[in-house]
Amino acid sequence: MKFNMNNDVVIFGMDNSWELASKIGKSINREITPVQKTTFADGEQLLFSNITVRDQSVFIICNTSRPVNDNLMSLLIFIDSLKRASAQRIIVVMTYYGYARQDRKASGRQPITARLVADLLSTAGADKVITIDLHNPSIQGFFNIPVDDLRGQFIFSNELRARKDKFVIVSPDHGGAVRARQLSELLKNDDEIAIIDKRRTGPNKSEIMGVLGNVEGKNVIIYDDIIDTGGTILNAAHALKKQGAKKIIIAATHGLFSKGFEMFENESIIDEVIVTDSTDHSSLSHFKKLRVLSLAQFLGLVIEANLNKTSITEIYNAYSQGKF
Ligand code: R5P
Image (cartoon, rainbow, N blue to C red; front, side, top):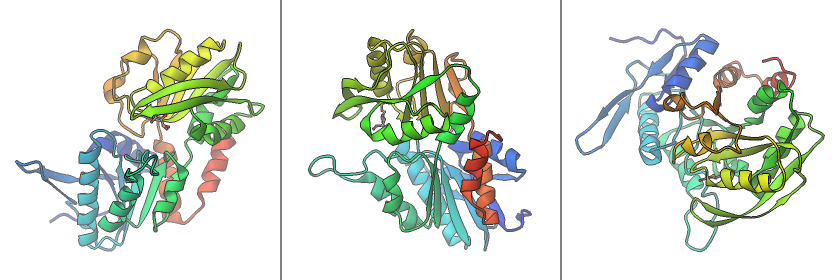
């Protein structure tokens, strides 16, 4: 018989988030429990907890990056198992929310998958979702359960504040302008930002119409939520170079790198690519231009705040005062 010795909290790490989950566990001195998983011959999955979760607060550290459909289904099945095992409260710490980019009907007869995923999570049994840099913060409103959409700018500003160079923060599209401004403000950057005027021409395809703002002779950080194929951000880098930008750093919360990292490593105009470990990058550790910032301490503090019923604003304040 397996007992849960951790009083009234169990923190699970899904397979594809295990590395980050382990670091979170270390940072808050709590045990991380693996998920039992069996795959049947036809691909069906069975996921469940090996220890009791009856009347416990349960956290699941997970992400639904590649392969998005499998990882999403695994998560839903696991949430369902916890609900049926009488967990008191199921809090999904979803460091990357797949399907977030379809957040509206961009043209006739299209689905809104960000809403569909919200419905699926709630139906499965999630009581709360903690996530970071949702593609569009309005997705919070697709849920009827609480959502903490954490702001990754605090992690990036912590890293960039320590650097000697000054940078103009550039959003690679109009949608990311608020995010770029927030990072610029945290860096006390004289509010200098620039925006790429981008037009989407198809899935994973875009065209640059121009650059709004002055980058001539300046170092720039192109700041996005997601790097998927890399097309958007590399196009932005070339447009900025043409406008006379000096050093170019790329920063994004979610580095999916669906077409590999080589295109960045081999691109002479790119100095560095900074992402978080919202998805796993252990297979990319040999690339020199890649820098991965860990969310472990930040998420650990957020989990503790949820348990202690304290404010996340206090965590943001501590980060902006450079306490971490
Ligand atoms: C789009 O609106 C997102 O913010 C990202 O810019 C986009 O998903 C990046 O995709 P890719 O790397 O394939 O161009």
